[in-house]
Image 1 (cartoon, rainbow, N blue to C red):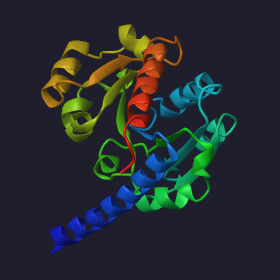
Image 2: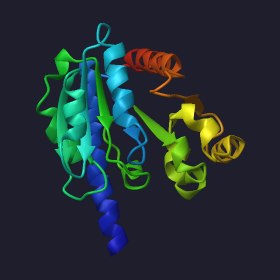
Image 3: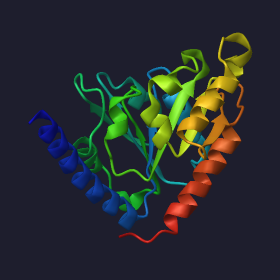
Length: 221
């Protein structure tokens, strides 16, 4: 009975996510979903991303956190931002995102970023209507997070190894990280990024630009 309940919840979520995806596609809005542990650098990376594309794209952000609006306040100077507080919930779901979309006129935006709740487990199983799923791992967390939390890395369209400037200073086994990742997802692209040194940011921006162009060429269904 418990399994049936879980399946029913996910089925409802997937139906809502399909509606979100259709709305975004019809409006021509590209939607990346960023997932990572707390403190991996999602918000800082989004600050830089929003500024980089400020003259190219009309951007908006949905931020998920258990509490506070601290991350949304950091991003608000650069884009229209909606904060979702889950009050202890470990992930966003499609119903939350659908409600957040009521705060946006989608025809006024080109890109809607979702900064998911900091967690490597719960957010992965919930479709939010996004176009692409991006997993972030900071070198300070250790390479073992690949094998400990495999689903995110198996499903990710891109892996960002953040805080890459610290690689010489932390015991992060890069070769082991890559070997374990390739066992889970043999084709996923990996970009080393540092919001401090700027390493990899151009590659990240180009990946986003190319991915959005691909999505824009796909007809809405």
